[in-house]
Structures are given as structure tokens and as C-alpha cells.
Length: 468
Image (cartoon, rainbow, N blue to C red; front, side, top):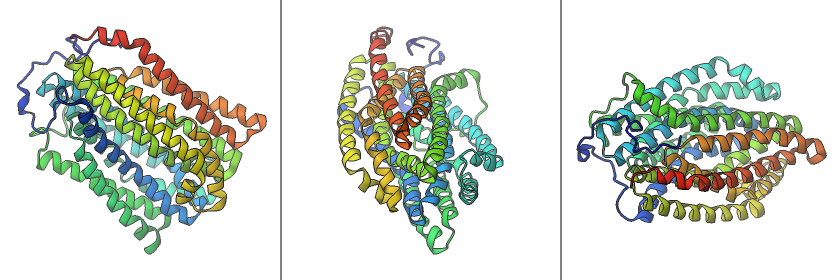
């Protein structure tokens, strides 16, 4: 931690090759900074929204079946969140390792990192989804739901798992294109999957009459289509690296670098998912299925603002990785200040919408009066933390881009763990389920402030070790 990525061991001491042969990549170390950030961030945000829209589309259609159905898919949503967290190991590993290799004009390293990330992602995806399928029933029982809702959730989960391996590996493909400065491609591919999901959801749920199972099948088929389109772009069209190997024999020097970069990001999000699972249990025991529905559905709605910040953060990470590797500190700092200003403005807008229009927004997805009245309370309390959430995610991009993934993991895990005792305390003093919402909001405020202070404490050391 803290070593310059220009050190001989940081990029594995691989012989440099002529970089112009790496077709399809974009050099981010030259040209207008603001233009490049927007060109990267726009498609990345759009891709995030498309991926998020899978869950929102399911929730919007299933919401017409009632709050019990929403509670069932909400419980499964925590488990798919865990799967998404695992995918970050290779998504972040790809974005940073490949982007840094591109910044140093090292084609051999970039190609090797790409193949290793895809191979590791495939192993993780198959192992994880097999375990979840086998233990679906005992895992769902942790939420202490009514028997009928629990049975619905188990069936939904097992069907969703048929598509999750494709989703996890596709996240790595997305990271590969982002690292290469080609973020438009993942957006276009994921948009196709979303359109398919939007068409299939009402068809399977209502026309054929499969209910929540229909939503799961629609999502799985859409994720398979996205995976196949990525394969077509990489292997048939050879958009990035000619003759890229999707599977390779793992070598320690590449694997250790990938794990060093991606594991903290995966762990912090996995820990977040486990903590949120426990929060769901508290919400269900305090507010019944309405409490669980409010937390899971509210979290899906908040993902709109989260993914906006994540789009800028990912773009910042790729931009910083290339320029930091090239020793262009001025471009790094200017991109950081620009991104921080943009996400801050977005955070203020989101706060206004959540606080003053929360009920109306929630009712779009779950038009049951008891549901959207409870949801409006969540939206208002959570709205106060939106600027700080944006701040935390932006700083995460800066840490990742300079090869430091431990700091955001410590901040996120520490702040999220705090939610459990804080929730228990606030519920015990009479705030009821609202105490859980306050615990979430206050911890987000704390995480954002800590991320900013920690980065500025380290900033001088981070850039002083980089060769200019």
C-alpha cells in the first residue's frame, strides 16, 4: 500500500511492446480532460442505469402483484447484491490492471491481465451460484418471512441463479472495455439486454401467468443475451485485443496483482450486502413484510443516485489509472476536482427529490398505499445523506485509480458495520423502523466525510512517490 505503480514490481517487470498494435483502446493521457471524463462517464453511467433497470423493471411489474411479492424478490435482491459484489473483484481488477498497463504502453501485460480476470471471474461465478442453488432454502429462511413469501423467494432465487454466472462474467467484460476507454460498448450491449427484459417481464409475469418466476426467467434470459453479445464483440469482431484468450492457465504474478486490486472492493461490497441482510432481518422483525419491502425497494430506488456517482467514479478511476501510471499528476488532480464538483451538484438535486417528492417516487414502483406511505419516510430520511454518499463513491474512484483499494474498503466496511448497533439502539429508544433508516443515513454521512479527509491526508504522499 502506498507504493508507486511505476516501481519495477508493481507492473510485474514485463517487457514493453509497441502499443499501437492494441487495437480499440483509447489513450486517456492526452487531450481535453473534461471531454474525456464525460465521454467515459456518460456510457458508464448509462450502463449502470441499464443494469439497475433490470431490478427496477422487475420491481415495477411485480409491485402490481402486491407488497408480499415485492418482499420476496427483495429478499433475493440481497443475495444477487452479494453476487454483484463478488463480480467487483474482477471488474475493478480489470479496470485498474488493464488501464495501468495501457498507461505504460505495455500490450503484453494488458492482454495477460484481461485473460486472467475473465478466467478468475468464471471460476467464481460457477462456484458461488452452485452453492446458492444448493442452499437456497436455508438462506432464505434467515429473513424469517411468512411461509408463502419464503417459498416464492426460493423459487425466484433458483431461477435467477441460471443467469447470474453470465452477469458476473459480463461485469468483467464491462471492466475490460472501460479500462480501454471504450465505455460505449458495454452500454450498447447492456441496453439490448434491458430492452429484452422490459419486453419479457410483462409477457412472462401476466400474459403467460408465471408471476414472480416469470420475472426471474426474463432477467436470466436477458443476462445470457448480454453475455453472448460480449463474446461476439471480443472473439468474432475482435474489438479490443486480437486473439484474446477467454480462459488461460493462471500465473501467480498476474493473479496476485488482480487479487490485490480487486479483493478489497469485492469484500467491502460483500460485507455491505451481509450487513444489509441483517438490516433486512431487523426491518422485517420491526415492521413486518412492509418494513422489509420498504428497505429493499427503497434501496433499489436509491441505486439511481448511487449508480450516477458510480459512473463518474469508474470513469475517474480509469482516467486516473492511465494518467497516474504515465506520471501526469496535473491531469489526475484536475479530473478529481471536476468530478467532485459534478457529483456534489447531483447529490444536492437528489436530496431535494428524496426529501420533497419521496412518496410520489416510491408510488411509481409500489402503488399500494401502505407501501408508499412507509416508503416516503425512508426516502426523506435517506435523502439527507445523498451528498455524502456521492462524496464517498467519488473518493473511491480516486483511491482505485492510484492503485489503493484498501482505504475505501476500511471506510465502507467500518461505516456499514456501525449501522447494526446504531439501528438496534435507535429502535430500542422508540423510533421503530424509522430508527433503521436514520442509522443508514447517518452512517452514509460519516463515510463520505471520512473518505474525503483520508484522501487529503494521504494526497501528498500518493503523488510524491510517482515519477514525474
